[in-house]
Image (cartoon, rainbow, N blue to C red; front, side, top):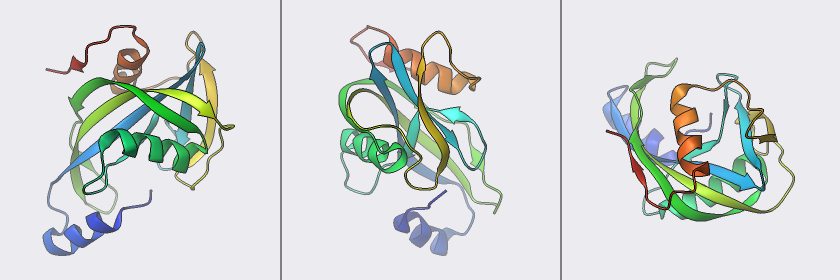
Length: 155
């Protein structure tokens, strides 16, 4: 996975110590379909995810990550869920944990393709024929496809 330059600069100072980061999940919806990508690092199917750059608006980050990772243009409709991931230890020993902001996104244009090397596949799935996903990712997806207008807070 491509590590943003600001994270690399922080890692030069703190080594592998736990790092708290802000991230987005972009659940892109087109009719009764949802866009999913298959990650190159784990092989898992997930909605598009990514790190928010310093000073970047979260909704802008969600749209940027969707275009960068899946070659799809999408616009944010609402903030669907706010949660915190479990701590992650990467193969190189780096430790991170993420504040995740999950957005419901509306597809505008583009045919899904793994655009930046972070994913092996990108494609549409109907909601009744999803590939296996973690409970956490299913929770993010569920919050975004739900017709509720209020944001879900994971407690």
